[in-house]
Length: 207
Image (cartoon, rainbow, N blue to C red; front, side, top):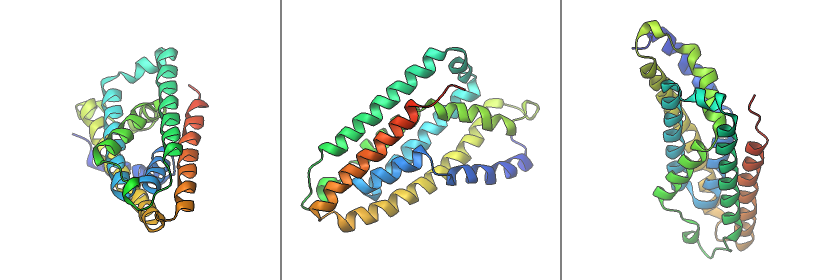
């Protein structure tokens, strides 16, 4: 079990990190504008699930493989770049909408996109390896168990905050989706967000 006092110290630190704008928040923002609040909420759930996978891998010690094998880091990074660029291209291909319905995206697909984007960002596992161990004490018991507790706190906080951002963006998108000019601009904006995330990931350094 995790020391309750350590957990109490971890929660506000995790909340501060969740509130810091980053790739996950921007992804939910872009998806909310493009496909609505429900899709953004599902994507936020996928991102949180991906975060739990990263935390589990870190707890098992597999994160050391990324540090020891530079090519593995780069392989994950460039696959992530390619996927984000594919999403950007998809946003540009979407034509003007006559109503809100064409913008809709199934929740399962939005969840999958959020999950994949998170899993293909090696920066997440490097962050987990740098941040979470500060709150883990092997003398308290299972290291993996403590990693999972910290991961759950991060996942819940991230889901609430990223989901809220996506819902707000989705509400704006739905109110203006009947405008062909807005819908066309929305495709450009979404593509720009996804492409920007791809560039950000491409420029990420192993250090």
